[in-house]
Image (cartoon, helix red, strand yellow):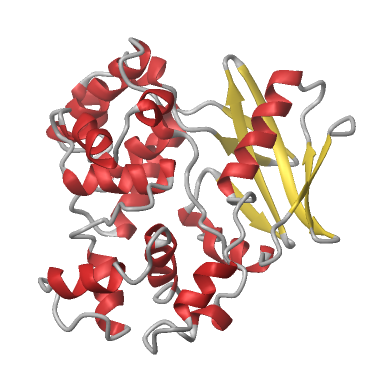
Length: 298
């Protein structure tokens, strides 16, 4: 790390172009910005906010911190966040070998070459989005997410553009159900979001706590014990934040439609066929889910 620049080597199989395609949702995405082959994002550490921009140069991610006088703590958080966000410690060559063994997925190894598993490192953030996204389509979800972030999230202005961070639990805990309902968030979801914020503030829930549990089942049970969080929400959270290898988001409409399109299953309720196919990808089920989602992305 030199001054305000961090250089991170990428794995042997890595494409920043694929990362940008995956993350570029235009106006729909309110927490980062893709422009001119770069990715810009705000991040918080306690009371401090910082802004960073990622570019790809000489087989490395070059991360420039755009904020003035960033603390050592937030520099380290940015470094850790980027490494985890783009799964930089993972060589996906073995996964590609598995993809090529199956006619339904063989094309993905070439078409999506170099796409890492792109998650959401912040557990609290992904829990908000998974609760908010229950039983609604993506268009409506992005509208609600933007309204929530822009009303309650902290932000930094840079070169005429406003960059937000996810509203903190300390902010959400002070909101009423009626305030969240004004954003078209249902009563049940609002109560759940406030309850989750309280669990984080009281240190009863955290990423470290989940990681200390000895199995996927115990982590899933911890989340589903929270009123308003079912199996889909728990599985999506564990998949996106903890990269839970054995976590399959059963019931995810986009995943099921993509599996039918790729002729992996013939109908949405054919869980047996779904499980049999996933079992062909031991240790790589999370990557398989990501690539199946990518196969129908526009």
